Length: 135
Image: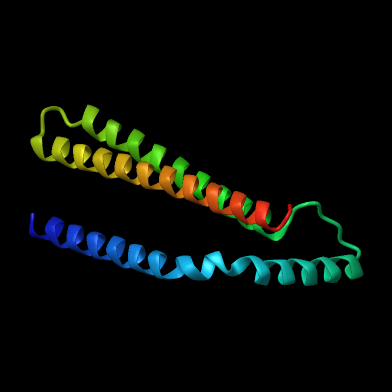
C-alpha cells in the first residue's frame, strides 16, 4: 500500500511538472509560426535539391508522427485491459488478484483518457499551425 502511495505521488508530480512546462511553452508555440515557415521553406529547398518531393508540411509530418505514437500507446493500453481482464477472470475468488486487476483496469482507463486528450490537443495545435502557415 505504501508503494502505491509513492507511485501516485510520483505520477502526480510528473503530471504537475508536465503541465507547468506546457503552460510555460505556450507563448513560444504562439510565436513559432514564423520560425516554422522559415524551417519549412529551408527543408523544402533541401528536399527539392535532393530530388525528394512531399506534399506534407512540417507541422503535418510532426502531427502524423505524434498520431502514430499515440495510436501505438492506445493499442498497448487495450492489451493491458485485456490482460487485466484475464487476471480477473482467472483469479478464482482470490481478492489480491482481483484488486490487482481492478487497479490495472483503472490505470489503463485513465491512461486512455490522457492519450485521447493528448491526441485532441495535438490535432488542434497541428491544425492551427498548418492554417497559420497556409498549408
